[in-house]
Image (cartoon, rainbow, N blue to C red; front, side, top):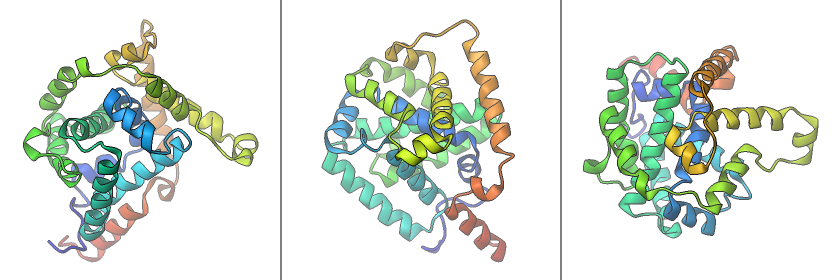
Length: 264
């Protein structure tokens, strides 16, 4: 495999799932889930600019996911090295914390994608999780500890719950993710604040019951059904947007390369 090729083929389940509009909601939910690990959240709050730039954190996370999914291996390896360096500086490089960040991310991506009606079978979800082990290894997680099937992921998410808790930093994170700082023109002259808040609220509603319970958020009768319908509506409406608004530059470059060289 050339260093200019991606870790994942253009038609792989990882590439397909990561290009789905469901990940807009899934990405915000992943950060809300990740905030429930007190040790990991304490490190982020102490050393990063997350509180002042929650939107920027989400954007950078999205760019990293897109790069690893679609970008050339040499660029991915350099980016992964930078991420490992940052994690080490933050003191977030223990296997437990790294694994939690990875597992909560894929848990959010998979659950939201399935609930939006994205066309993935059980076998494809298992394939997705197996392929995502590469993501975990790139940031220094030992391969043997990474959930590689849906069953393993669900078991991990149950086993980790006693170590999760609500903290003041987690509460602040949920608020910053819902109402991120914006420039005055963006906040008062565009619908961006309302649109963002509605998507973030949907992400919060999509959290599993146990996570909402930890946050102290109520669960109402029929909430899951209403949330699932809202998720499906969100995805269906997002799919109506022009493709260039929904496609990362890395994904477009990979598709162009695959078109010019069908052997890739």
